[in-house]
Every structure is written in structure tokens, then in C-alpha cells.
Length: 299
Image (cartoon, rainbow, N blue to C red; front, top):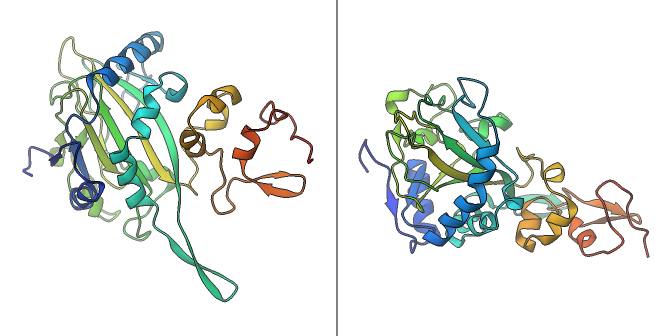
């Protein structure tokens, strides 16, 4: 890796190999991770959605020439393809789901941290948009470095269009995940993510990054992003208000659990008939018809 590029791997790389690069550099590009059918399907599903929404209304973070849309599991079936991609999911599990021994009485019991999906977002950076301030995604939880001694998020940005230095390819500062909280990021330290449509950038929450400046006159940079977070952290996108019960029931079980319709080590349970129940049990019950509308009677 040089100053002008990020490390690159192919889709047949192992999760362990990708984790090694990410923990060394803060991120990695996986070339050709998703095929043309997935990319064209995303465009077909999400182009009309983004055409209908307004741009952001500030010049700093959201941007005033950038369009964004979320709730993507309800808007394209290809969102599940991305979230369940074996390489991306395997990387997230290895980095996030590290167990900690917790005493239960006199016996230490290993508790895996678990992980869930924190947010989904389709992003089109328009011509003339300035660069986004460099930031760490884990700052939403006031994460401290290196005090907390573990990562909070593993993020993916899928190139739906080609990413270039000119059209706003995501800026990343390699190695910045190793910095403490006293060192500020500088724009001249960042390198643009340059990759073809179908490729993806995978990075961690402690890495400084931001949307790049689009200096073109007529080219939109289209990316789709999501991330796995530690299960005990509040997700950025509220899944309970984002999706209807019918939509949740239509998703694969792995996605249902990842959207917090599950309990992880006594976090996220629902009381039913005096029992701390897994919300997944409610999804399979015909007598549970609406969120917050009253729990089914205990048999």
C-alpha cells in the first residue's frame, strides 16, 4: 500500500486475511465483491427512491448536493445480499463478536458480544458537493480510543457507480484507527477510495473517513452503505419505527435478528406471561399483530 491507494483483495480472500489488512490499515477494498446483476438491481430499485428525495440542507455534514435514503431492507431485496455476504459478515463477526468472561456466581462465563445492523443508507453525491468532514463513525457512542480496547462497528460501502477521486470517492486515512482521541484528522492525510462498481470498501468505526468532494460537472457518485455494530449499542437507524411488522416477517431470519428482533444475553427481551421472551418467538405467532398493540395472552 502506498500513500495514494488502499490495500485491495479479491472476493475469494478469507475473512481472516481481510481482518488482518483491516486491523493493520483501518480498511480494505474488495474488488468485484458483487456482480452486475446485484448492482443493476440496486439501481433499478433505488434510483427512483433517490430521485424523489431532497438533497441535504447543510453545507457541512449532510451536504446540500447529496441525496440519501435509508430503510433499505424494505426498498431492495439486494440489501439482504449485501448484509449477508459471507466475507463481509465473516469479517464483522471476527472483529466484533469477541467474548468477555463475566462471573455468574463464582464461575466465569464467556459472553459473546453479538452484533446487529446499525443503519442502512444509499448515498448519491452530486456534482459540486464539497468533501465531508473527516470523522469516526463510532463517535456516535462517544467511543474512546484506545481506552475501550475493542471496535464498535464494521462498515461496508458498496460502489453502485464507479468511485473516483474526482466524483467523491470515500476519503480514508489509513492507519488512523490506531490514533488516540487527541489527534485531529487532516484532509491532506486522506486518500480517495477508487474502485469499480461492484467493489466495496470495508472499514472499522475507529477509522477517520468522509465523503469526498465531487469536482465533476455531471457525474453522481452512488454508494450503498451498511454496518454491523456491537449488539449492546443503540443502532443509529431505529428499526422498530422504520419497518412494519409485515415487512420484518418477510425478511430472512438472519436479518430479523440483525434488526434487533432478538435478545442477546438479556438485552432486547419482551415480557410475555411473566417470562423474558425472545422477540423472534413473537414473529411466529399469529396472535401478535402490531408493535405496541398489546402482547398475546400467555397460553
